[in-house]
Image (cartoon, rainbow, N blue to C red; front, side, top):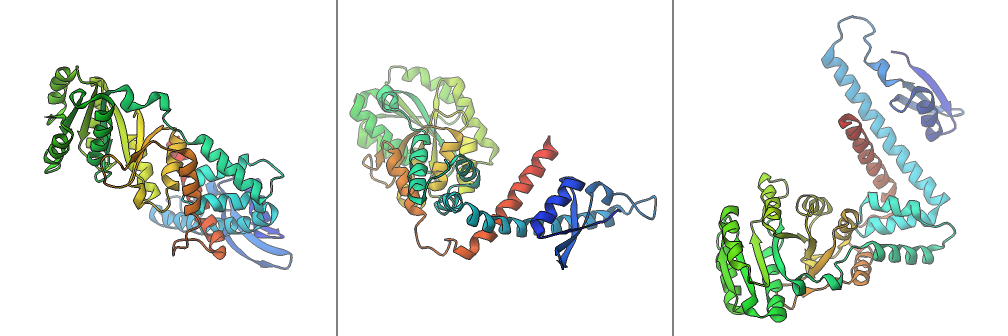
Length: 378
């Protein structure tokens, strides 16, 4: 293994020299203070796997060494990312403040970095916040009023995770459908054969609204039932809820072949990772999205971030159990303002000034893992 010594004024410049001369995969073995700044011992990654003594390498030992070196490299990158955050804050405080605003409101790093890169030069803090607000409002995809699903009618199936509020949302949609078309033109279908009492709950709503209720235990029964409902202006189908990683979620995509359009029902009162999983699984190929449980969501930024990135139009928002009062057409200005206001909440989870460099280091590690994963897949 060939080890080289690099001396630089600071760690960032030293790491830049290492990468420039040894490549992006170079491994920093150690760092220590030097009269001229910092001294780094580094080696090209490919040379680490070459056995220096025996022609028969110790695979387990080499693996442990490489893992340890990778860990040390990650620690150094974490520290350098923290240094870079501090330097960036001094060099371009407005751009860094924009990213802090988005992070604090629950938006993800991918969208935050994209918007920060597109921020026009020369804006002060107030102008930057105005620019950010307008950009988010313009990019939040909403279902157009001329394409109102209930007014147009059709066959819609509500799909989503367990507990996302599909059945209550379906009742709200049905009530609006009755107001638009009359009770005789609306039909409900209970297609949830997994949850105990699902059909019974829909029966209560159907009786209150005066609409017909039908039961279809599986896709075959649903395919046989739909032709008998051809005269109905609006058919709403309640499906079973599963976790996004459950293989049974693929059953929902089979509804497309029956001429049924899917509406992804996603609870905004979840962690960002859970919202992203639900959006990826249930939002793909869906006609639109319905965000539920906004009344339980102090920071809806993660949900809005996912909608913006996936470009899935938002048809309705829901907050509360009242039928049909707690169902509304979305308003981009209201949602974005509420999300940004959520970033100002004083909670134990809000980052303090000294936490931001550590946060930047964690984000750098995640970005590195994503890059490595993408390289290995490619």
